[in-house]
Length: 237
Picture 1 (cartoon, rainbow, N blue to C red):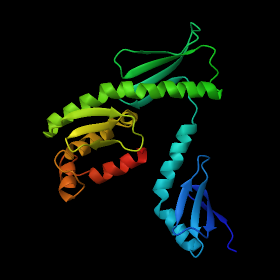
Picture 2: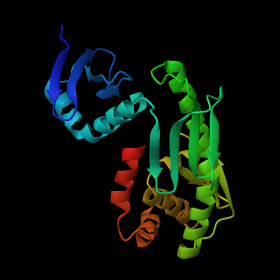
Picture 3: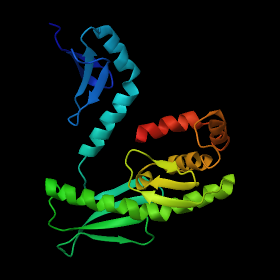
Picture 4: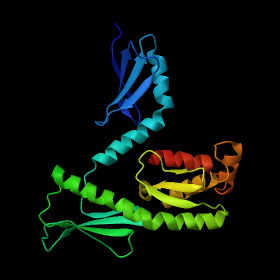
C-alpha cells in the first residue's frame, strides 16, 4: 500500500500528499485550518504531484493569504480598503450598549463599539464582522455608480442599467440587454481593479464573448495591461 507523505515547500510550508484509489486526477485542497492536501490517483506518481504543486503555487499562496486574513481579529483603528472606502473602529466612551455607525459621506465610516466590548471574544468579533459587511453595500451604492458613469463617458461604452449584487464568486456581469451587475465586494479591492472590472463588463456591451476582439477592446482601455490586471484581480478573488 502506498503511504501518505508530507513535503515542505518554500512560501507554502508543509504539504500532505495522499493516494486515493477513486481519484482520477491530481487535486489540491486548502483547508480552513491552513492545511494543504494533495490528492494523487493511486497509479499516479509523487514526482508528478510535486510538479502539480509548483504549477499551482500562486493559487495555493493566494488561498493561504485569504485564510490568514479571515482569521485576523478585528481591533480598534482604521481599516483602509482603498482611497474611497474605509472603516474606523472605535470604543464608545459614553458606554452605549449598542454599536453605532456614523459617516459624513457614505463611504468612510466610523463604527463605535460599547466601551465594555471584549475584542478577544468570538461573539464580539462576529458582531463587528456583521456590522462591517453591512457597510459594503452602503459604500458600493455610493462608489460604483459614480465609477461606472465616469468610465462609460471616458470610453464611450454605454450601458442600459446598473445593479449592485451580493455575489461572492463573480465581480461582475453584463446582460444581453447591456445592463451591468457589480458585486458589492468590489469596494474591498483597490480602485484601479474596480475600474478594470467595470471596463471588462462595459466591453461586453460590444462583444458578448471572450474572443480576440473582446480582449483587444479591453486592452485598448487598459494600456495593454489586461493580463497583468487579470492576475492582480485573481489575487483578490
